[in-house]
Image 1 (cartoon, helix red, strand yellow):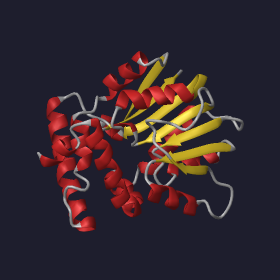
Image 2: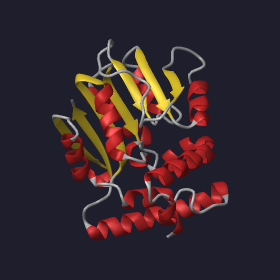
Image 3: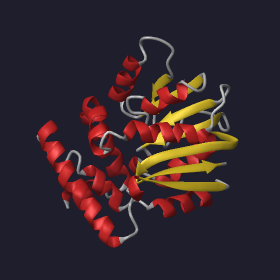
Length: 236
């Protein structure tokens, strides 16, 4: 498929993802609500609750988008940074926080984080690692900026191990993504990127094992939506 070829190498995927999220930024919040059946905020709250943050924790939210998780973190601790590679996403996130205390937001790449080692207690990401052009490098960067004992938490679509479930799930995402892409952008491939990105992405168990091999001492995977989504909670 043409879309699969357009994300077949790390450099191709980097270019495609940057262009894609610039295109969809203003529709991003609507998309997350539709594709999660209105449960996206609930899942993000669960992710933040798993971290058991104290008020002095220093937190980083990667692929922050319009800042949903960053604002949930900010309600629990004073020092929060939200980072996203898409400038428009950061503009929208900053606009949400214009009325009071808010996280710090900046444009940056999770592949080359602009922070010294061992500075954060918690690193979170919602729908972020799947979009990294080089997954191992992204995990290594998260590990690098975490303090000893720090936590990494990720919410994302899962790639089911059962072949029948996987085929049905990816087919459903392809169909719905095509419909949404046509209705919102007159381009059915816009949101078909989601199932395309899942085809080469590890499932929940494989992701947990990868995080262990990259230096996290414990990794727990929590199924969400019957295993169609997953939360990973890793401790350095």
